[in-house]
Image (cartoon, rainbow over all chains, first blue to last red):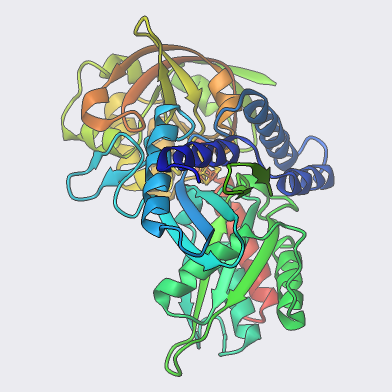
Length: 294
Length: 195
Ligand code: SF4
């Protein structure tokens, strides 16, 4: 059994991974994007810079982006493990990682407008714990930047302006609208996590959980898979491009989940994740052996 | 690739146009939300001469303090500029800035300010914190560190080969407005919304 301090150490490692090493599927998608852009174009230069940056960060174990974002943890744990201990370990790990410059002091108290200085505050990080049958712990972490978080959007169907009804076509219209409105502001090319159904809170949470899916992951539900592929293709025809400079590479992936809704409500929640799609996953056994998943 | 040495004069700025790729040399100052409020609270005489003829960089860096007390930038990419839209034109006018570095572009008010005062909007590639930190050769000094914290303080830095793209020039052109408009038209066509 690991002590809370040992758990904290493991979680600092997960944070280090997420902040400095971009998952290989994201790097591959960015390379494909670069190769598709015209030689000498602003889009290509931006992607070259992005790829160079990823190499530098990874080699030196330095943060890929200075906005190290909100740490969002999803943890599966064995029966009987204390979620209070895990949550406290995540919070302490954020403070320690901030002390090591793996994270920027990124938490502000909105009442006093003071930066807490150590990266942690109520609600930062967010920690979702779920019990499962395995004796191992599985941790997934996303560092979600502020610029792209500002590009998130929530729609209520029906939406007259978009001619969007309460069906998958309506969902498609909302997501494409959100991508167009985001332009390059969320540091495109981005990854879209979305959810239809749920309430205003759960819809956004599920949209973010969708971002845990690797880019090549296909939706097992055929209609939603088709929707994901279609939005991916259409959004890359809008010529928004990397950083909104114009170009073919606007979105790298679209991941859509759904939740039950009330008869009166139909929400479409869209989360925009920047190209710095910092995702880390680790499976940790009771004796502390780590297997990296992302 | 063209070099732009800072501080610089108005004529140089007027010669730049949307789409120009530049490498910056010289002194720039970081500033984001708190800095923009503070700069408009009064005339901040200490920092004013450092802003004159230079550019303000929308950036909240990760900074390392070394044992001997000197600082270096660990990660230093641009932050979203749109938040400074209500203040930017006034800050440019009051302090004689020749431009702004940021990401995501800015709106009509800033575009007019760039035109009126002779300044440009320079877009750095968002998220490229390591590439840009390498272009920061020296941290000269810092203002309001205690009051605002590391990301919001005004860091006076020297840069070399700092890559940016002119996306809003001093003649009323904005790449952001163009891309926004064209992509809206495409989307409306795609969704059958165009009138
Ligand atoms: S949106 Fe992402 S890549 Fe861009 S500055 Fe924020 S965290 Fe960095």
